[in-house]
Image (cartoon, rainbow, N blue to C red; front, side, top):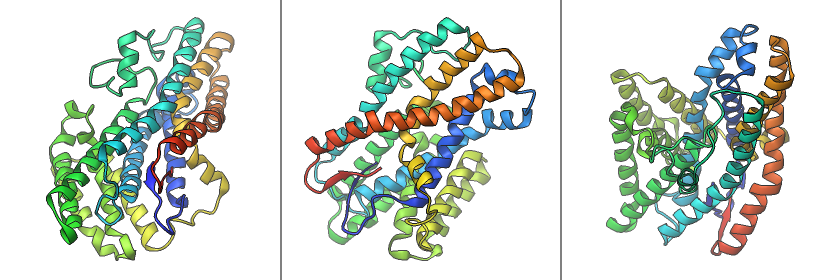
Length: 364
């Protein structure tokens, strides 16, 4: 997440890293369970677990949305006033930060799909890409234009970009129409208004799920949590947020919103009681959180390749395929670590060294 590093602002938040690490592991396992054929054979050994991973573990994406909003507003407007003076530059930098590693991962995905296609026939393998499809992915428009994703989960990168651009636009509008001490209030009102529109209308209609506004309610929970807990404010500042979401759930119960609310409350409590920056104290968890975007980008091609390998050369024995799923999970983390070291990290260092204005540095 691109952030303006304020004096005394830590570069990493241990509690957020832990949430990211957990959520991304669940998404990797979800895709392993949802996209066979290894999970099809292993299902006999743990039907309840594989069923839960394939259906319900995907709600971990709500954690990404909440964390995304929390980190974005921490970067852009910690006090409710947008710090940057050129909003389009922020959007451009966000696009490049997301897309440079993303396009590299898409090339890996196309190559892995081509290999897997030689080893097995399965509906989890993406079709051979067309030029318009590749261009749509590069512009983060594949879902809007109706193209099949070149990898599982790539829709989220496009949604993340849309949400960031929406927040930048709202903060810029608040600074444009308000003056002085009223800007934070107007920023909050605009964010809450858009969040309510998402919560009570857009998020209730699946036809909107290719647009960021569908997900803005969860994203806004992260934004509001940051502002509500600023300067160690009490838990009471979070109660209006809980009330509005509770009313929305009474009108239309959505488990994904329950997950988003719980994640927002966990982050809020961690910040209020001082856990956010220093707990848990684990280098491994911190590292898993740091490489989470890289793991997210490359895990599906790696899982697809190992699925094809086991389909072609291994038996259909459930235990063999369960072992294959475990190998794919660990291989995804290892591949993500390599991708972070050799692709994401160098790309971001090079990009920010040459492009970022004074005072602006990348913080993940």
